[in-house]
Image (cartoon, rainbow, N blue to C red; front, side):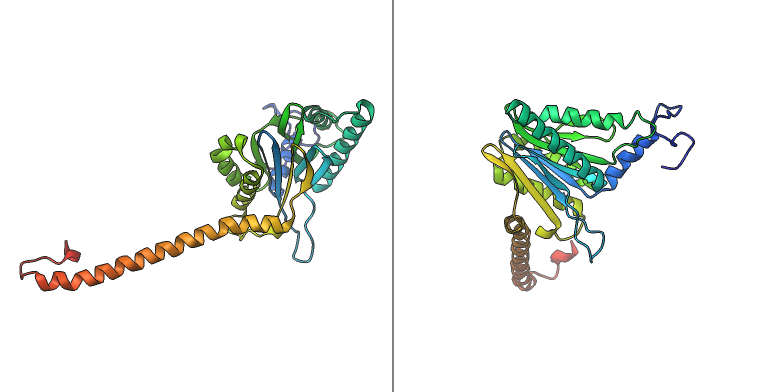
Length: 278
């Protein structure tokens, strides 16, 4: 993308019907560290990559609690995500105080989308440069929504946003049909595996990811680092064992071939052809 005469403010349309400032905000989401969400019928899991600005700094929080039944993961400008998560928390508290019941997830997502859309129609404002994965549980079941800086929102079975999220999307697309009946532990494992896909060669450690879960009779909370590391160890050891088995079988095959070669050479006549020359 490059600067042109139609991106000076958010209310200026280009001749092709585009709002460049909104597209720039959506590009900011793609540049943020990856965030992943997936749901079953009874649980929602949110995960994100912990990305520090330098070796001397700590990472910024990318997952926020809104209420006991709602959580949000963000990708993009963390400051914008923090402001919007505070707004969501305020809406949830006001609804609980007024109606003495939890705020439905879909209604909160609509309020959030309306707030984002206003910023695309005011020349003195800018769009929020953050994408939000809103996971929650209400009377109609578990839900996972993606809120875009343009004001659009979509409901998903599983989704990933942020940098290098396409690899995680590919993994989720292969597995999403089984998520509906997945157990709590399987959802956490799939979320961590999806996070690993976004690292592209980096060794996955518990310090590189944050995982949160909510579900039926389970309020929103973060999964502790020890539990995450145990899950990582379970699927990191499997490839190593398979490689050791493969090396053992290859060694046995070479030994059998070495033992058979002298027998073939001794029993054959002058007109026989060596197996390697066929």
